[in-house]
Length: 239
Image (cartoon, rainbow, N blue to C red; front, side, top):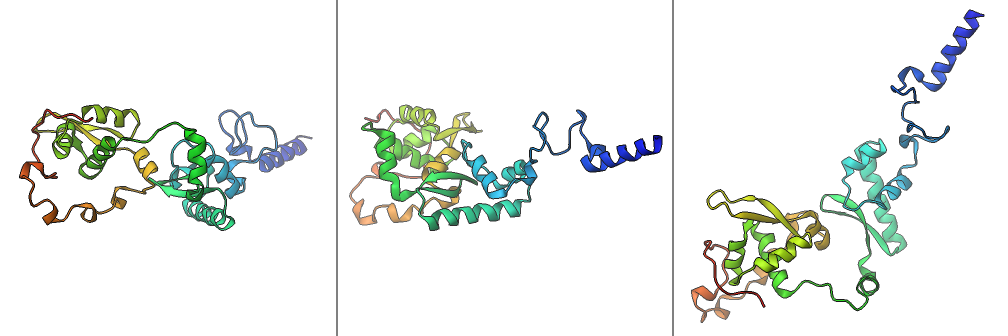
């Protein structure tokens, strides 16, 4: 009897791999408290699992993070994500899966932007002002940068506009300037998301947007925007 009992226990251990069970006595890989027969994460079909996770993320998810959560090799996850993205494009779906700001996330497809804008805004104006766009551009190209330097580049006081950009999550504090102690600012991951950029290296070159030399020939030196200025402020304000 004892031999039979011992053999049965051994067979059970092999069948359920209880020799590697966790401290709570659960089956390895199965969530504690999960119903019997619930598949472990690593056994789930990869593409549907990726879709399910990406439906609930509030910021782009990196391939490393997804691979860790789904217990799969990063290469397999990366391949599946690209295949899903290609599938959605080929099928002409209204959403797109894109690699933005170092991670993957679902976005509405650009071809249906008017429909999305109509639904989201519904007659309300949610665009940034020209002053905010100009200030955001200076931060993007000069970051990390202080408010006084941004104001000097634009030729107007930018304190109010910077507060707006901070509140909207487009810029954030990035330490202080060693020489003056002034707070420095940089763009955020949310900025990259909204711009559809993978990183700051994808910002367009400034040269094509600068005026020709003869167009500003008659202007005074003080009237020409410069990206090499000191911290001197001015008394003008945005309107």
